[in-house]
Figure 1 (tube, rainbow, N blue to C red):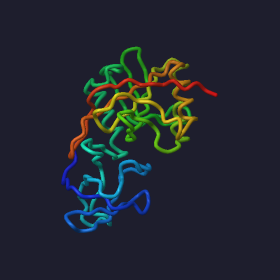
Figure 2: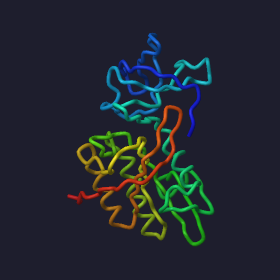
Figure 3: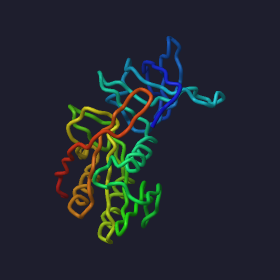
Length: 233
């Protein structure tokens, strides 16, 4: 995934989840934030941020905020990116557990959910639900950073798919590099953590891949271990 027309700025504040005020070369700009999550641990006053200038010069906000520096670590926060990064990763054989399937399609319905990726390869049929992860604490990445009933629903639908002979995956795209492992954020959303534990013990494969992130792009790098150890109450 490549961005164009990149500029650097400094975060000031975030009046709501859709916009932020940023200092760009001494001028205060109101910019679009490409992530409606909280991102409170990284979007702090004075943080260096990376923005992409809009191609449409008539757009109300001229820039979109796509990445934030947390110390020396650059974290991509574009919530539209993980699905594309995962799709490209599967096509290029970078998700070892999946391989390079003969057929790959985005946004396919199963039951009451629409999963991000569906693949076929010989007798294999499978669904992949992609989640972008931007919350890092002491090199541990956690998901979610806000409660996600929709995410929990998707996990239970994957359990059903696995019980009906499909391969089923939850793929966490870690939008940074230099982390040690992934775990569910049970303090934020215990129900999601419990669902993930049930999935891991019901034939659903839980994967996490960190990414190479640069100011003008992001791509899958390598897998990291997953710690899924919460038992349902």
